[in-house]
Amino acid sequence: ATHMADGYARASGRVGVAIATSGPGATNMVTGIATAMMDSSPIVCITGQVGSRLIGSDAFQEIDITGITLPVTKHNYLVTRPEDVARTVREAFVIATAGRPGPVLIDITKDAQQASCLFDWDASAPVARGWKHAGAIAQDRLAQAAALINGADRPVILAGHGVVISGAMDALTCLAERAHIPVAVTLLGIGGFPASHPLSLGMMGMHGEAWVNTAIQEADLLIACGMRFDDRVTGNLKTYAPHARKIHIDIDAAEINKNVPVDVGLVGDLRDVLERLMPGVATNESTGWTDRIAGVRGDSAVRDIQLLPDDGHLYAAHVINDLWRATRGAETIVVTDVGQHQMWEAQYYHHDAPRSLITSGGLGTMGFAVPAAIGAKRARPEAEVWAIVGDGGFQMTMCELATAVQESLAIKVAIINNGFLGMVRQWQEFFYERRYAATPLSGPDFVKLAESFGIRAAAVSARAGVLPAIGDARAHEGPVVLDFRVEQEDTVYPMVPAGADLQAMIRRPNPIVETAAD
Image (cartoon, rainbow, N blue to C red):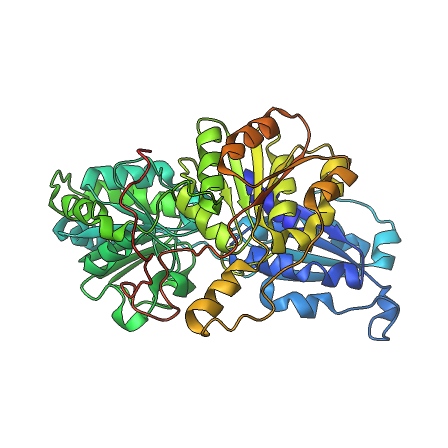
């Protein structure tokens, strides 16, 4: 339920709500709450609690859920009086969306739920305790940032999830075009800057494009917009962007200078800050820096991310890129699970719109995709919603297919079925001398499983069958499950080993020169 609420929130920009019973119902929410916390997703979770007189007695299904969730919520409440319910609920919605969004939990005792009270709308007005608006940024700080931008020869914009949350896509595009600055995105920043834009570089970091990481390492200025310099983005902090001055814009003051020391920190809503910064930024038409990046990008030696040839095998890249080909131009939301397929989606599906990719970034929660896709479809029923999920992650929450059927939510599920926990297998291959342990998977016949729910399903094991299967799924009005039986031991390239220099990438052996025109 929390993943569904999270998917709803990310697809719509509104608060998602999940409700659970006391005890195990509440504890089963914890992973979803932590997922939302790590990715700044506004959800409100309401749990039941034993009667107030029984608290502390180890009563049936009593659990200290407020204590358990304290580290993974923006705020939580234990409500014991009916008079406090309305104010608490209204306040929770304010806190969930104020500043940096996040989850709020309300635990309501059984007696408070069953009692009656007089309702006073004015008396129940929310009070966002402990939250203060960032306030206006001093003009001299904006001028300092603008001066750094105007004086830079090799600037790069780093666009994170905050671009999407703030609705700052137009402001970011305006800045990039005015100053002719290339834009790299984080995993959660995908869609915050159009992939088809000439200044778009692609994804940075551990599984980012080689030329993107090269540009960051050669840059003399980084403009970080709504991102937190996560370890998957920076690699070795001691060698990260060694020549670059740094501007960091974020709604959360705690993120400034937390991981990477910066020259100018600007705290505030990203769209507002960019709009206030813009008048001081000079127009720049120089192409020397972007030409340099284009030269690196055009070098066949860095073509790790590309379409694989038709050699008799079905690769995950085939499936994901063909899905992009089939759905581009349509209002489509892709929800991924966690693992190799998540990285291949970021590499081979090209997003031009915000909130078109939903994924678990910070916590890396397997089992996220199917329930989050259900929430996304509920939020935006007019959109085509695809869940891309590995066979391991699918088996964690495949029971939610029943929810999709029950609620008549026509999600489409693409299972990237390689018979392995693929990302773990890849790490065992690279870093543990191929000592494979607990990574091969067995599972049910996913087609028969889906059909047992009354869901249309098909298995695909050859490239020629991919687009027809996708076309049939799109044409069907109900939910569909497609079991893509892909190459088992495929690997995500490039890969920066954890904690290594961004340019210490493990590269695809014998890079393929030929790539698809699009």
